Length: 208
Image (cartoon, rainbow, N blue to C red):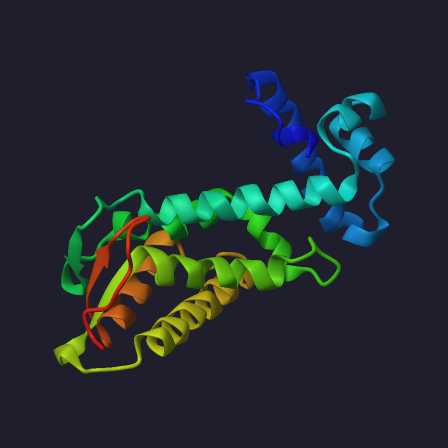
């Protein structure tokens, strides 16, 4: 892919950020399938030749937008933790849910889930990324050490969490970040005793 061949300069990053922002705006305005490269460069105030320096077509721009935002979500989830760090749910706080703060900071992008003709893959890859974070980066310990199928437990918890996030976004972020995080913490305490961040290392389970 053209935009992945070498380290990007600050100017290249800015240009690509402008093109991505333009695509988001246009999707909200007219739907993804109606957007053309001509629309994108017009919205971003660039010419077509500049666009083609960075992307082969609209599809590659859309893929880069989705991939970069969801990679940012993965990174944000682990930022509050050190590898091996164990946190009891009674001690969870706002910084523990940097993932939620990331979504709110980038709400202009995540609002795309509210649209039918939207960024291809967002409705499936967004919840799958949350599941991936749960599966690969965290070990969960259940309340009272109740033995469970941990794969099922993580799927149940991840998709339940996504459902709440989806509702929060669809409501126009009616609750503040703090209010939403407080609700998530209260729910977590009902079935999770602790979480341990393992980062990119071996995942396992404390409750099998």
